[in-house]
Length: 408
Image 1 (cartoon, rainbow, N blue to C red):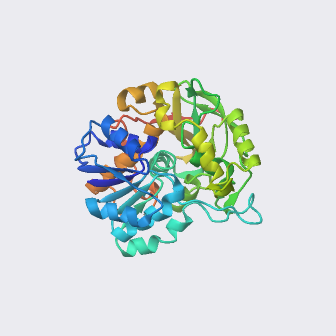
Image 2: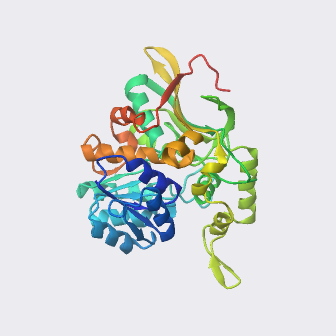
Image 3: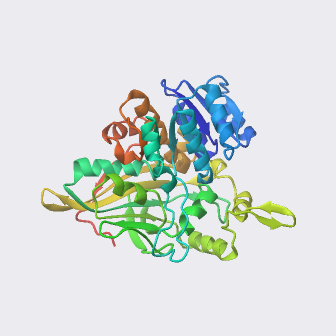
């Protein structure tokens, strides 16, 4: 398989590192606006310029994405940049006629008059509106194939097929014990993406109401995370799973809740209050700059925080329903330890955990174990071949029975 990897930040590097040992990978083109960063990753991968060539790319220039895809004759375009560029890369893949994958769907826009009750433009609306065109052309766009969304969506399909006869509710629950030494505030993932998903109105889906929104950080609950992470307060956050799961999974309710912590939430609220979350450019002494880009420039690069991090991160799906006429609750999860991730991949835990699903999906598509056309989420494919490969790739999953445990 030949892959055009658009974006070689923390997650992009992890995708390349995880794909490197795989014999099915013929070539992965490392493309980034910061060419020096791509060259740094190439060097870390062993300096193989033939298998991991480096190219400058401006992801906002669709023609450039198309030209590089054609130059290298790629089979797949892997979108690993901030989702503001999704539309251009998505459309480029369609024009070139190759498979497209991303880990975060096209961006939402809040409802203009009632943002905390009604959705406006939803995550992925741009892509799903073009699904019929992709299907007619026999092309596949696999959207939301990271860890969340991605792995947890595979878990949703597995729960429906194997663990439950009837599903009442499913909700992603994400928490971590990670600490970053030497920083008062240092997000372990793209601050651009973090601001987008945390400050937008969260979306909830209910069978009798469809999709609706609520206030940011709503419905706090304490959730017990496994492998020593413990109880963490989680809150509603806008995320793709809520837009994906109801399309393929028969459930009555879907949510996404994230363990952010009071300090993190207060920083985000302050950024919002000051207008520093704005992604539109403003004039600052004759220079046009987006306030959100300024915030990102002031913070450490998550790709270079691995040696300062310690602890574990947990991504998982809580499911409640009925099995064999009895109530059942389970939590399907994956825990990544930062020390182990750094030792094995040279990448911090959050980015390696985000990256592995995309690499497994590449293998499954190449082998024909996952196949289809149109715009599809991970739920549209059989879960078994994905989950069978998780341990081989270094990311084993767990299933915790919670039927007799209380979720406070």
